Length: 525
Image 1: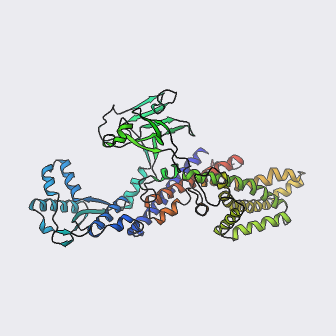
Image 2: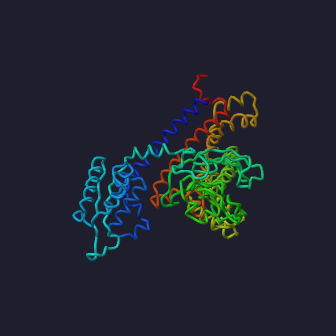
Image 3: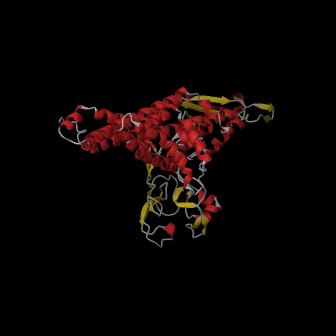
């Protein structure tokens, strides 16, 4: 079994990477890269040369190309010792047109052209756009930069190798002013004033200050040492990783009395355990210097609601439980009473669920629910559990119908099997035949789908969440597609693929436990 699971897991990982590769090829080679500016209000405000330069900067940010400006080139020469800072400042400003460059500037501009040509970059020089001989047009300043399209293979390798990051004391490049680069263990977390037993592992020189800590929030033991990086968002939740977008809490701030590292006590929603390093942030900001003793000043906040994944899972897992609690007994009853009243009623329900588009019956139940007083719009600030009722019902209804349909079919197939006839002739009662043979064999395909049902709850339901405005993970992919957020599209695709792989493997393991006749060892029986 172990060998089988590892083999399937390896194949699944390879398949997931192939899926991501296909998605990247589609995004970066088949779609017009100008589409990313469709909802970009900043882009619309720029004009002339500045708009062109902005386009290239965004293309670099989105991963389409590698961009280097003329000034970047000069600074690199300074770092290499091939150019002194005084000369760099003199030749940094190019003329409005090439013929307006000074002799020294023209020399280094030519070096820039030569370097770009040797390294596969295409140089773009935009001459100044003037409204008068001395006045630039809006965004008309001269520009000089070079770009090179990034191959999908390079982008894929960079993405895959960066999926998992492990924090370490060498993360911070800058000098650490307070203390030395180290990882320390304490039994009394400074966040709690060091007065109570609260183990924590604290880093200096790491990205996160707290690598491991304990608090009162489930699952009580938390870590920042290993981070999953599915891809950075550019539009949906700008600058934030996809996984963090799905797992970060939402809602209003939760205030509490907080004691900061400097000893300052005030009402705050800051989560000090989330502190990350920002070079120079303490000295540059008086608010930070009043609260913190080092540059670990960037913190998230405590919020009252669940994360996107949390809302989706809460609704999805209850819907899964309801579907099995209702669908399985109904499917059994229909099979045992084939062509009788309960079977006909169940068949009508199955036909209705299959025939009517999901959007139609979701709106139907939303209207009915609204008439009887149930909330029809999800509100994160509401304390009423009734806001979950309609989304759960809408999500459970099709699953109930599918379970009824397939369990009825599997059981009827088993009832007509030869081994059932032999069992009857052997003297077994109908009850024994049903419990020990028919139900057990018919339930195997149903049991295989249990892990998939549970794991799919993590990603939510697109239509249901949109209709009831649930702030879940279900519509994250559609929003990303609408906003051409490439990072989110790739990240969510990989997440879906990995969940699919895990659900299939977990289903195989589960049915081998339920039915010992099923073996994945590869040995002949």
